[in-house]
Length: 114
Image 1 (cartoon, one colour):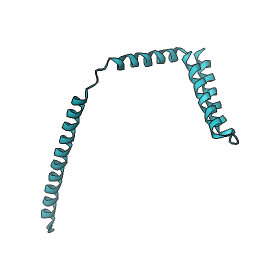
Image 2 (cartoon, one colour):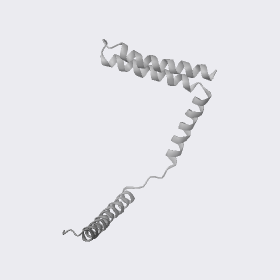
Image 3 (cartoon, rainbow, N blue to C red):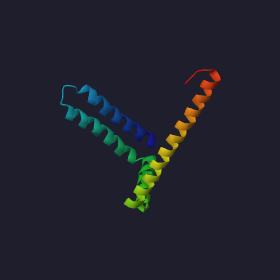
Image 4 (cartoon, rainbow, N blue to C red):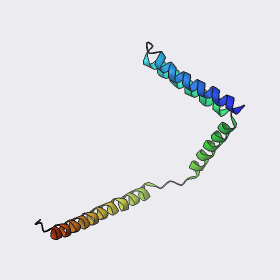
């Protein structure tokens, strides 16, 4: 039975997609509404399948988990951002120094003046 529902959902999505292109004489707003309507109806049909119910449950559980997250305050965010910026600057200087040193060694070995 779920395969039939998935088939209907696919047909609704395809109908919305083709409706968007077949109704080129209509205003763009109408065409976009047809496209959205096709995908929304396909989504509603999918929600009535076993996999759709599990997916809806997963999204609901995900929202519950996100609400449990302890987000950093402004001070912690600024401190962490400062540490990241300092690390990026130090690494950029280090990589520049290594690159310059290796280039000097290559020029020396190749006998070029730099």
